[in-house]
Amino acid sequence: MKILVTGGAGFIGSHTLVELAAAGHETVVVDNLSNSNRKSLERVAELTGKEILFYEVDIRDREGLNRVMEVHRFDACIHFAGLKAVGESVEKPWEYYENNIGGTLTLLDVMRKHGCKNIIFSSSATVYGDSAIIPITEECLKGHCTNPYGQTKSMLEEIMMDMQKADNEWNIVLLRYFNPIGAHPSGRIGENPNGIPNNLMPYVTQVAVGKRPELGVFGNDYSTHDGTGVRDYIHVVDLARGHVAALQAIEKNCGCAIYNLGTGQGYSVLDVVKTFEKVNGIKIPYSIKPRRAGDIATCYSDPAKAEKELGWKAQYGLEEMCRDSWNWQKNNPNGY
Ligand code: NAD
Ligand code: UD1
Figure 1 (cartoon, rainbow, N blue to C red):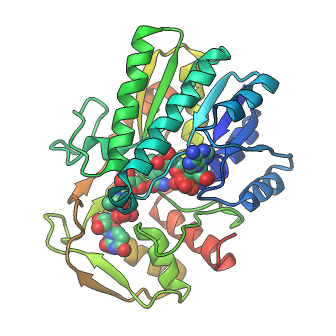
Figure 2 (spheres, protein in one colour):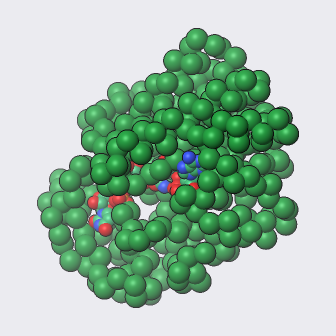
Figure 3 (spheres, rainbow, N blue to C red):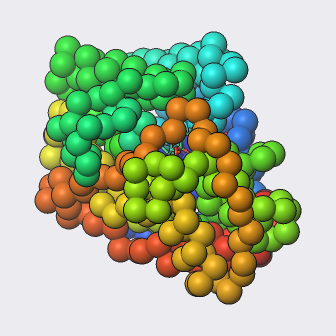
């Protein structure tokens, strides 16, 4: 298929480009580079041995998108473009709503005007809020999002579902990611956070490389096996392959389909620290800090639906995730 990849220069987008190429799909990337670097696309080209067709266009720029879609006829769009920092979204809610919701509305409109009504959307486990049911299935009710970032994901899901109800030519696949970490095993592409990392694994790798003195563990009094928060970490290469698998749903005219992309296995913060230390032979100094506002104790998926319907299942475990995150960080201490 020929696929428009918005946000393709970013962390998950760049890994997905590699897997799409391996599966024989053709891609065109649109990204405004607000949180990425075109070097990631050069690295993808190096890994795939193919040029990447790239347009530096903002998805809020209707004319820019029109120009791309006048030149290319797409079978589907995989839509990664968006802002994703939870804390920043609390400080700049308007910017998050305008970029994520405004941008996606423009994208959807330009797509339908060009007759492309197939989209795979990057949603998040955050839409479940603090789920009463663990592991979380797609049937679980959506919960309360405590921040504007999460609200944009939840609202965009609703908007796309309503559009699909009104026009059944649309096929919409909502992929709810759990916690993507890891990097391509080559160490050539990976996560490149700006400033102080908000998420656990980039923080751990920056401690490992000597950029930060120690990890703060946010709370050890949760009702989990060691008191620290439990999450469903998923290797970004597995996640990327989940998008390739999701194209099957589009091919089968799924209408609206929702899939969890996780491993189904929950690990605590200290499990991650210990596994990282064991696999990479590096000590990660840490100290216990107060709980982070908005955090929940436990969140992990039931990934059975994606396996049953798409034949997709995560292959990598926590050890490979820790190995590949470190391989990326040590080979690229300052990112791209
Ligand atoms: P990322 O920031 O690395 O990639 C997002 C890309 O979108 C960046 O390259 C950025 O420059 C681009 N972008 C942002 N706004 C744009 C705009 N208006 N026009 C064009 N390009 C724009 O983030 P990621 O981790 O690769 O996440 C990809 C998607 O997955 C995002 O929508 C994110 O919310 C979602 N998601 C990520 C996680 C995670 O933990 N990484 C979890 C759940 C969902
Ligand atoms: C974060 C986002 C969420 C997003 C999800 C997917 C926040 C508040 N939420 O959730 O919207 O969908 O990623 O990737 O950012 N931790 C520490 N020390 C740190 C960093 C994290 O102890 O320096 C702990 C956290 O308290 C948590 C776990 O590590 O228990 C994972 O944290 P993080 O990587 O930020 O992911 P989530 O909180 O699951």
